[in-house]
Length: 182
Image (tube, rainbow, N blue to C red; front, side):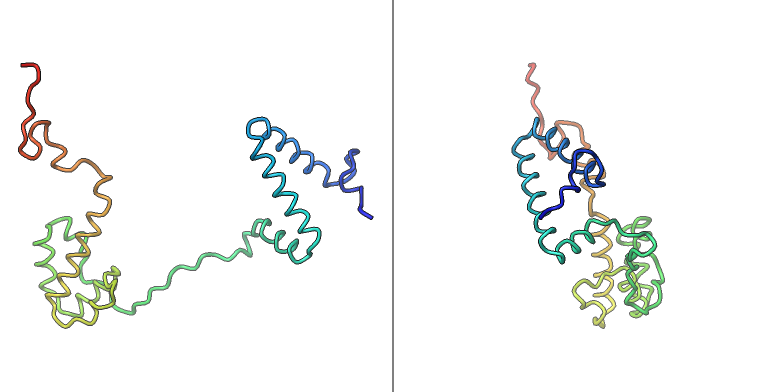
């Protein structure tokens, strides 16, 4: 025997109002998109039937639909730094922005291999896990410069017009635009 008290039209059940609101929303949706409204109604019916039939599913559904308590919700942990290396002796991106590749290479050339490795580690420039093993400082400098240039140029297409596209029409690529009014 099913309980009729949960959906009584007299409003005596706490479930009556939300069911009525859902019904009205589905009817409204049905006026503009009957197929979506019917599909949504079927999905809700299947979920409700399964929750009524399977207590484990009902608990899992309740847990998934309950907003987390801000005091007990797990906070995303800050990603711990893996490295125990010292911070880099210079900020390669700032040096590159100020004095370009030549200035960056010059500044990096004044550092020893361990200081170069500190920069690699601090800025996550060892994507293939090889640079920290290299013994040749020039090779490490090349990696740092390559990564700085790459990261600096990333997204440049969205930051503004390039020099070539900033040229007046008719000068791009050495091609001349003929005047069709003559």
